Image (cartoon, rainbow, N blue to C red; front, side):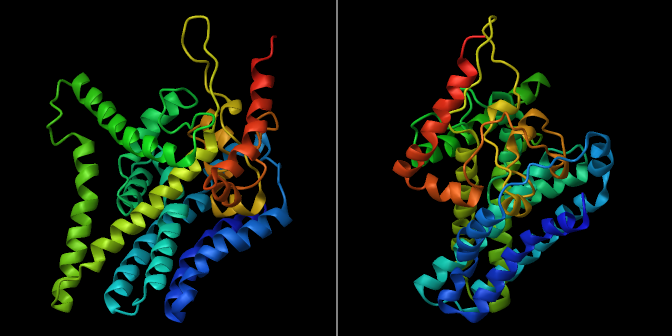
Length: 362
């Protein structure tokens, strides 16, 4: 992978910088990150087009082991924690004093913590390294979605593209219905998975070893500590801090679920003769190899290969021509998902084409 592409993965850091710039410029400038993510990137993504180039098989291990790519995700972790600290200060400063400014600032923060932050947490959470998994969970704590670590790795990757998976949208299911199902059923399923793990070890659910107890409480404790600390410093209770923290978490979670909706809409694995589902392969996720948005999202859009080979690092994920292909990158697709008639008109013909190809007689 050449130097230009290596540098490309640092473009994600533009987003937090824009939120900071928008805050200091004030007013409607607080929407600059939103305009950039869904305006500028969408246009540039379309103009730059698709890159289907894969890392050569003989180079995959070497490139996959390069520390540089891990370094980028490590740096992001510290940048996001620093960004959150600055955002808490910004809220306390009193400089955000109109409703439009609040909306723009909260959405911008959610784009940072959800649009990029959860993407990085997802990448780190799949790795064997304890440090990477810790960083992944730390990022998820800042958006109140730590159970994602359990549900995604032990639930979604097992049940993806089946009716049992809350994070796989069904055909003709709109995003708003999907959001409710994925968020609430996903949280409940994470409890179920963790309870089963403890049961196998002959431990009670009400046990300090239950990760779901910690994953539920830690974001609340984090918010409480931050609110208490800033309130003591300013000698007044700053009620805007918990409001901001949970509001940006909601935006971040919604962005995640929009991406989940796009990634697996309508895809269903075939049942085998013994009643189980076929093994997950690159045909079971929507793929997008749009070059610019893949830089910003650490190649998350090459989702077909990710589900077929979950442990692969982002820099060596492959494009598969046989995978179902999205017509646009994620920034455009999530906008379409917010308007169900446009989404169904765009995606149902493509889904039906995939179904005809998959289910045609051998």
